[in-house]
Image (cartoon, rainbow, N blue to C red):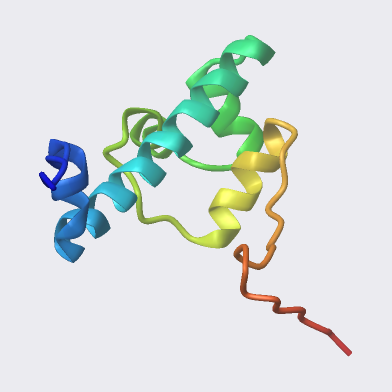
Length: 102
């Protein structure tokens, strides 16, 4: 029986380094798209969002463009709060983890 040829994508993600890079870039794109969509929906400019979040406009612009990816949780929380979102931690599918804060 003849083996089915793998797609270029399937071969690409078999390499752990390439898969890690793809995952990282996807997360950065996701953040950029979320921020851009929320700003568009709220009709808010980079400067107004930066002012509302108490951060520099260059941080907002860097996140929108994908050039800025390393920010603190506090900064991210303030930006998300200014556009009506919040950070929520949930376990990954299949991990069955539950945190209990006492």
